[in-house]
Amino acid sequence: MTAVLDREDAAAPVASWSQVPPTGVIPRGRWDGLLLALWIALVGPFAQARFWPPFEPWRLTLIGTVALVVMFALPRAWWWARLAVAGAAGFTVLLPQGRVLAVWLVGGLLLALWVAQDRRPLPFFPRPGPGAAGPVAVLCTVAAWQGLQTASPLRYVVPFALAWAMPLLANLGHGLLQRAGDRVGHVVGTAVTAVLFTLLGLLTVVTPWLVQRLFRHDPLHPSVGWAPRERPDPQVSHPWAPDPHPRPRSIVPALVLSVSVLAGLLGLGALLLTTRSETANTVVERLRSPSADPTPPGGWYDAYRDDVAWALSENVALVPFETRRLLDVRTRTVNIVDSHRVTAAPATPGPPLNVWLYGGNAAFGFEQRDDHTIASELTRVAAANGIAVRVSNRGVPGQLHWRGSQRFAEDLATLKLTGDDRPDLVVFYDGFEEVTSAQELIDRNLGDVRAPYEAFGELTYDRVVNKDKSATPTPPEVTSEGRPTVPGPAPASAGELAARRYERSRRTTVDRARVAGVPVVFVWQAARTKGAAVGPIGTAMADAGARLPDDVLDLTHELDRNPDTYVDDAHHDETGAKLVAARLFGSVRPRLELIAEARR
Image 1 (tube, rainbow, N blue to C red):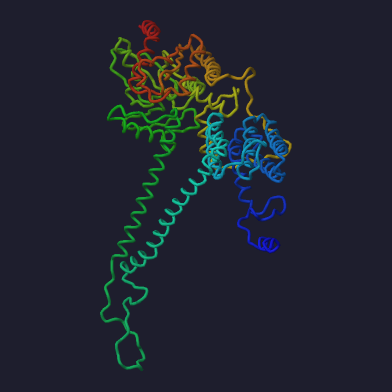
Image 2: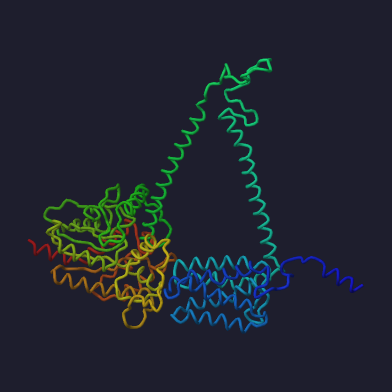
């Protein structure tokens, strides 16, 4: 009896691929599991590899794939050998100082085999619960996406840690996660099937009906103006003849075709306008620090948002890779003439003093109309105190101090060409761009590079020029050394790095102003540093401001009593511009009075 049962059991078909005996290195039927393991192990390091040029994504993929196949082929009980292979792969990546990349690769290899192939990283690890592989793959994909946004590990360590916890969580409730996933998959599959079959039914039923109604043509009974001649004579030589009463041609098909073409053209135009608007808004949002849109302060705000998005579009008045990146444009609220934003000019009894205001977003006046920027408000507060001042707003969105210093030198050298009056005072209002560029240097693992660096220009170049371009093939026996850095200890924070780099570029401006004999005032801009809404940019700006020398006017905390004026960590509304202008005027008033007295 036992022999009979054994023979029947041997002849019985297998119930799943897992019962098929292994053949070769990889068991048959496990290719899907191996591909899933490759995705879990390599999707994160593949995305992170862009921060370490010696390890292009294809090289890291090759290293990870070889390591994973070797680990997969090892006996299930050889956990120590799998650890050794994963460590060797990580050490290979660690050589060019890619610590984050190496740790992520080792963790991904061990996690992938644990979840997708039940190869436990250590003997005391439990078996992964049913249904854990799918959520782990999703969490690793989320971690990879976060890694594309920044090199800071805080952004992707949370989803990757959850991916490691998922196999343990999947054991809870005796497969509850698996049952929930199956249930969701069944519901989604049923809904998708219903929708697809509904669309298929509409296509097979409605389309012939529309053809018949529009063209008066029934495919089953063809008669389109021709009919058999009704004669009883079976020997007629011409059985077909024109219908004596043909139907008149319908204008419906031509009308439908015309309307369809017109609708298509309108739709294409709307798509082009939408794409252009989205591109413009992308540029505007990239120039600002990340935050939600502020509450509109007045009826003018919608018009301003449309104006600034259109004016700062790369297709209109913004040339992102140039030092002088603003072209002339006229709108309702944002106007640029001679590459400078228009400033309010109240009537003055005598010739005004000329003040040039340089800077980035804050000096240019984001979230402010022309007549309510810091430059315009400075003109008003000076006039209210009996000093005639004409402020030239030379702020350019996204520019750091070193670019403003270049434009300052060029503006002085071309006074005869431009017809501008020589400045009596020059003010540099900086901060936000210095900090964001310093943070970008840290995120890219570049450190304090010697050359000037501008985050806006670099990110725009990557988005526009490097988009969808593969890396240049690497010839043999070459090494990419990267950007040279300044000797000394590494900066402890983005604020410290921003203060260092700002001070170096500021010295250049001091030398240029001394040679030209022009007085210069340096101002570190106001930033949000208090309240629950404070972000990393505001904290870094306060840190940098505290490290600057005494000859820099630090306005970091100027609006602490008016936190509602901020729209994000570094940009404020028109009320904030008025308060900053009043504080700035109080600081430069003695100089302006001396200059005005000397001109009399």
